[in-house]
Image (cartoon, rainbow, N blue to C red):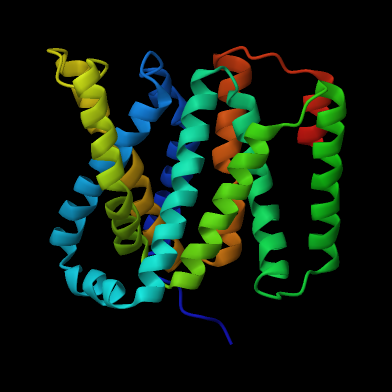
Length: 278
């Protein structure tokens, strides 16, 4: 018996491709802000993402959903945890991109699906298939080889994949929707972000509102750069098969990989070549 074709499937596929390609090319955006410390960029990203989510929630009239999540202490705490996890992820990613480690960030996101599988097996007691087990073992071997080849642990890649994996796990357990959930995460972090920006302003180190409109627009637009791909991703996951989304997610690290090699000319050593192949 054949299933009826989802009328939104084509638009969902386009949205999914747009989301993952945007995430893959976002290092270009952070490079434009490379002279600003990653901590200040992160603070702006939380503040302006929260503002963008407020606009989206008002447009979609989803405030009752947000209030329902807030009434649940469990959901609120899980969103606080996922907010901390994504803060770590965003900070390391922005710092690594502007420190010339774009290739290692792509490795981290290539490994993310495997971390999700591992967390599902350990925390959620999901059974691993033989193929998944082999994939996890290969990824572990790849990290070990890269550590040996570099003489150091690829901490950027490991931090990115583990923090993003933990973020996904907490979001799954919380049950919060993508946009209401991101609003709660950013709202819980925003007081600290605003406090940090005020601290920078009093020290005279703030890079915002200094009479450079182009820079101000870039900082404000971090909310759009963060929120818009999420809207596309939410549309894609609603109307596409999970396996299709699973294949699409490799577009992001692939784009980042090509940026690192061909746009930013980062060294691509033999140890990295073997690791990416595995």
